[in-house]
Image 1 (cartoon, one colour):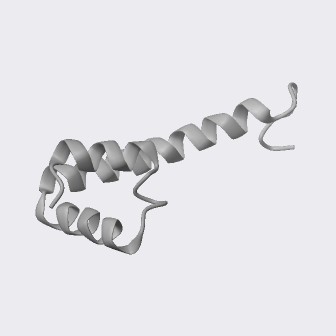
Image 2 (cartoon, rainbow, N blue to C red):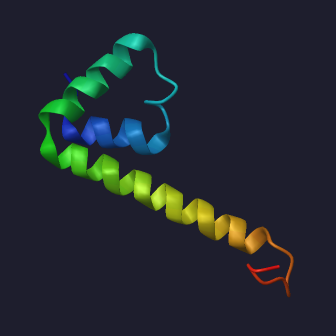
Length: 68
């Protein structure tokens, strides 16, 4: 079983997504049992979406409106 600290590290480093089936299983088990890590995972996913949108915004050519 993973501790919260281990789960957060594995999630934020990307190692959990690339892990073997057994490691992903233990990560999922921990997230199902721990409400704080579930909340952290949701917040992390939202932050990833915000940052992806901002990165896309920065990569647009200058002087272009969103309505063009």
